[in-house]
Length: 209
Length: 209
DNA sequence: GTCTATAGGAGGATAGAC
DNA sequence: GTCTATCCTCCTATAGAC
Image (cartoon, rainbow over all chains, first blue to last red; front, side):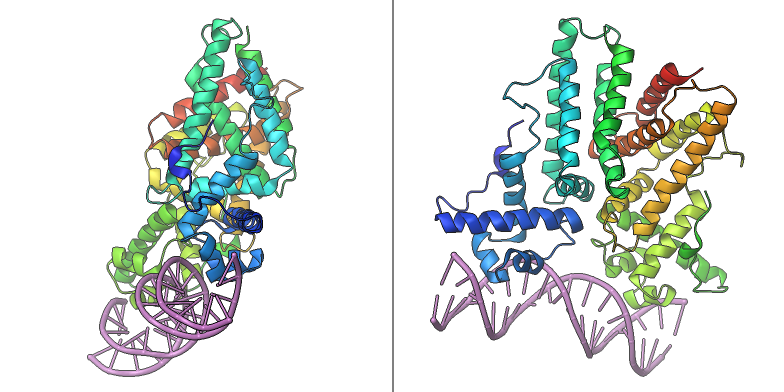
């Protein structure tokens, strides 16, 4: 679940404590606005204003809008990225699905985080979008993580031998993504984690050994 | 599943045959580009160029960019909208879920249609987006349609009495939406309808009477 | 019904003072 | 490190000729 090298910005070797603080504030604002209006729908002036500096001041920290996006996505990953391993240990077998329920519950407390993901994943389906690689990385890493967990569980006999692994994983990711989108459209008016738990329960009923 | 009044454009009472043809061409192009780059990411000049006329010529047919979007969404609904009733009869009970599998299969043959929906649904989560009402309408009408089908099926004893109807419907819509997004991200590299069929089969196993 | 031309504004990025 | 001022491009929309 680590972040690929291409997203690591190499802009500043080291900065002052105040500089780091301003930088973090800018990145938080950028993530919020990119989530709300998308990358294309957000202007540097908007980000600068809400972060409390001028557009030129912002561009002192990040040389371009794309650099800002890249840094923001990296920052998200670093700080509270999709931590699926609560205690640093990757859950295996069905425990991985329980970890996803926990993730959904944590996300339910942070709509802006969900919104960033939903908005950017759709906008960046375009292969020329600056976050396109980021989206592919999200799917790939989540798929790889779940695949490893299920394969491990199969070896330990947690899954029925005829479990359609690929399908199970695709449906799981789809349900999670689709619920997030629906939850945002419905103004967070239902319990996302609870609904997802129902899905997981159903899969356990069907495929648990 | 009819389209709400607010999306009906009232621009032209009647137009020439050639005018209708140009109009349809413009709308097809607009749907394509809005799907690929979103509403915000698409310029009138782009649409005009690919439709083979000038930007001013385009604005002769549609007074504004928003009017173009509105007309395009209405056009989509009219021509090949999410026709769930193949023969004009609404399928009831589990047949409604089978109709959704058919819909997924038909959509698999038209990636641009899927892309328009995925892109716009995410972009228009913003309450100020001109297609915001359109997104809410999509969820509402699909939910209402499925609810009616399931309630009918329950009365006829097709569903177990303890079926969690709301959850079942939310998960169904989420799975469909999530699969579409994943399918686009993966370059249409799996059978969307087949995966969705697996989901429906699982729900039948769990809740069919 | 379609065009050219252009107004009027917003967005990204740069230059240079402090 | 932050600012003001500015350049240049792109966008939406309008005006008016053909």
